[in-house]
Image (cartoon, rainbow, N blue to C red; front, side, top):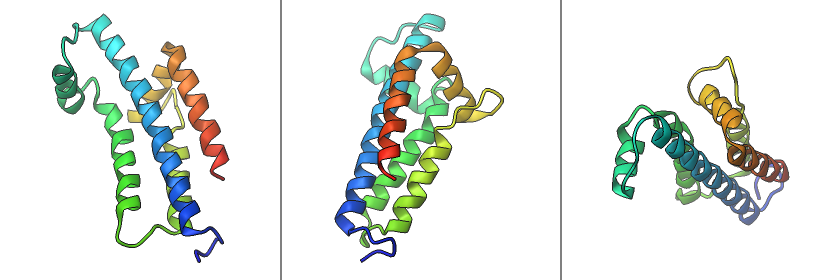
Length: 137
C-alpha cells in the first residue's frame, strides 16, 4: 500500500479526476481564445484550421503548458508501475501552482489572468476546477 495510506485505485481515481477537470478547463480556455482570436485577428473556418493554430500559432502557445501537464498526468496513469500517493500529491500540487493566475507574471500565469478578466466562462471553469482540486486533498 502507498506511503500515504491511499489505495492504488483511489490514487488512480484522484489523478483521473484531476486530468478530466483540467481537460474541461482547457476546453473552456481554448473556446475563449478562439473567440478572442476571431474577434481580433480572423475567423477560424474549420476544426483543421483551429488545430493548426493551436499547435503552431503564438496566439495559442500559452495553452501548451496546460496541455503538456495533462499529458504528464496521462503518462503517469499509463506507466508500467502504478502511481503512488507521492506521485499524486506532486501532480496535484503542480496543478495548484499552474492554475495560479498572475497579473504581473509571464507565460501561462499572465495569460490565464487575462482570460479570467475577459471571460466569465473562464471564471466559472476556474472555480469548478479549483473546487474539484480541493476535493482531491
